[in-house]
Image 1 (cartoon, rainbow, N blue to C red):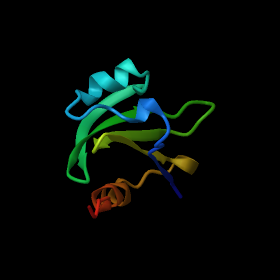
Image 2: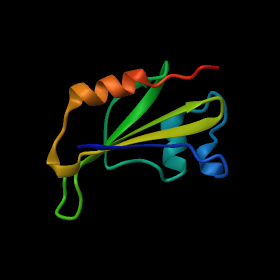
Image 3: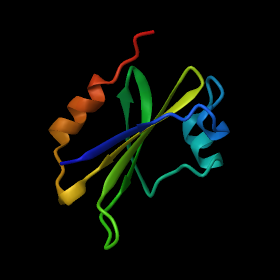
Length: 101
């Protein structure tokens, strides 16, 4: 079964991009880019940048999605434990993320 994490630390400068920042450039400037960039997607109505780490001898594959809202950076990490991937489930989960205010 996958492990899914959502991070949004409020006390780290590198998780507070300025409003209207070029998120891809901002991630690069803060050394938050991933191994392989895939197509962007939408999470909670905003563009999310998608990075993929393929399986290695030391780790399972995982995908990271970065998006920003109101000056806060969010990271969704999907770890493909057991070498199993269920993109129907993952896409449904990502589409369910929303903010109430």
